[in-house]
Length: 132
Image (cartoon, rainbow, N blue to C red; front, top):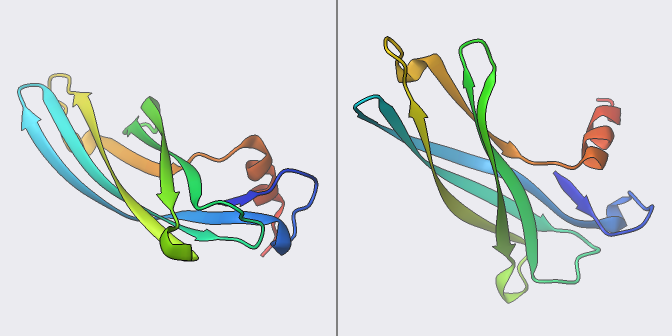
């Protein structure tokens, strides 16, 4: 995801920061009819030329979908990535817990966990407009 400074400019010189999900690690634990998912999510950001501050606010989400790809739960989070000592790149590990209540006959494999960056409508339009 690319975050630009306020205003109409969308050139390289207008970039505040770029961020991405670097890695996700899961641990699942069953208890009765519940499945507890513990996720460690590594986010990385790189400061852009328009950045004046020492941090980036990176919104991300964790969603649970069933086997028919219906979203049964989605939670949004905000992560602050701090650029210490004037560094251009930095990262943070966020730890998130989700619980799925399983119906009779269901198993954890009936569900999928999706992690992503929560982008704005403007960022979505920009992404859809890119041609590779």
